[in-house]
Length: 148
Image 1 (cartoon, rainbow, N blue to C red):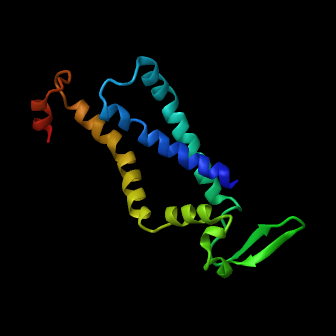
Image 2 (cartoon, rainbow, N blue to C red; image 1 turned 90 degrees about the vertical axis):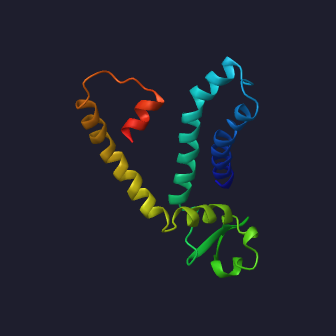
């Protein structure tokens, strides 16, 4: 399960980093490469996000104050999580627990509320602005400055 989570994170990292090549070398992508990125970029991001999200809510990421189950050859051994503090990299669920702890930080709560509020309010603003127009939109730098 750890490898699946690492795959999800690497997939998301790849989707974010790969467009940098086209900014560094303009027009370096062919039409097929552009089409492939446009076609598979969002589904790949959704797949990576689903993998990371599901691994955070699964049994594979125990909270830090509970027991960690480690599978040995013969049976499942329960180990106190404090014994992993000396060597956290030896914990088989270290990356999963680290991801879970980072995504559970309180700093994300106000940002999530702000994003959700913008998601709810922006269609109303767009409808109000669009209903008060007397002509079609003509996008230019001047019209953008007039609206702000």
